Every structure is written in C-alpha cells, then in structure tokens.
Image (tube, rainbow, N blue to C red; front, side, top):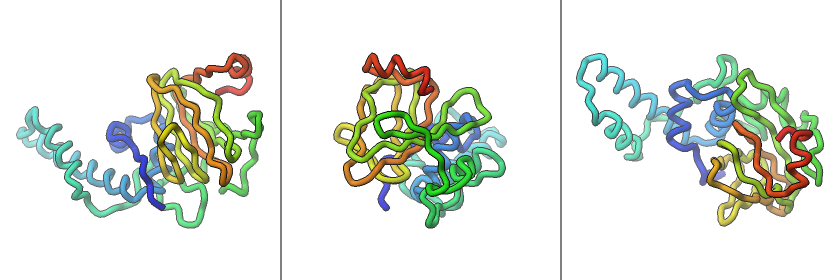
Length: 225
C-alpha cells in the first residue's frame, strides 16, 4: 500500500503537542496507524521539539529556532518509527495488521467493518456518527456507493477525509486507503467513489457543509451533516 496524500505539518505538529480537538486527533491517529512515513515524521517532530525545549531551558534559543526545525524536518533523515501518540489515554494508534479499520478508530466504532450497523443517508449512501468528548468537531464514518458522487459542496470550516477502503476521485486527485484529504472554505468539490467498490472513509468537520443543491440544503438538518 502506497500512501500519496499525507497529514499537513500543521496538523501533525498540533497532534504532537496535544492541542488538537479529539475529532481531529482520531483522524490523525488513524492515518498514522496506516502510514509509516507519517509515524516517522511524528517521531522526528517530537525529537526536534525536545531539542528545542532543551535549547530554551539553557537560554540559547533564538528567533531562528523554528526555521531550523522546519529545515531539519525537511531533510528526509527521520528517526526510527514507533507507534503514534494517543488522542485519548486508552486508544493508541498502532499499525493496522489485518483489520480494515485500525485503532484507535476501531475502539470508537466497537469493532471492525463486519461489526458495523450503518444508517441510510439516501441514494445508497450510509453513515455512522461517532460520538466524542469535544464540542468542536463532528465525526462520522461514510460509505459511498461504487461509482457514485458525493453531493457537490463547499465548507464552512475544515474537513478531513481519510480513506479506509476503496477509493474516490476528486478532480485530478485519486485518494486510496490511507490517503487523507484536507479541505477548507476555499474548496468546492464533488468527490466520486471509483467504480470498483464502495468507498468507506472517516470524515471530520468543524462546521456544516455548504451544499449547492437546494434539496440537500433542505434535508441537511435531518441528516446532521
């Protein structure tokens, strides 16, 4: 499995420092469970952050510290991988093994793919709302029928979409298992599940979607999306 779309530096730094809301942390930790490259990036960020803290404690840090850290993060010489840090104390992000849904997400859902109970969204799509302890994000699992589009929409805030099974096309970009798409207010799009199989993905938002279709806007409060 080759992952082409990764966590942004901003999100990964927030995760490393423990400042992300729980919903964002679930998405990042689940991607980390699937992506050795980003686990190595996380290790290196934490290592570099520790060195910067030591510099600050010895009064030798200066205004170039952040630039130096960014340069080091980009030099491709990351440290050895380890399991990612936890979004919550009892849910570690570890490599997925044979499971379709890795930890920590599997614990939130109560099982792997075969154990899930989906709720209809209409037009063959299904979802599962995932409760969290934060009031900032909305987290859900989505199942989009093979070959079918998501209704065209833009965003009132940030949206993270992590593919767990199948794939989807968004413009010229193809997102497969492990790929993470990060969208914001500047993006209006209509992702389409590829025709080979249903696309199952984790979606996290911090604001309602802005649908182009009047009908979708009408039923949006009922669907809760």
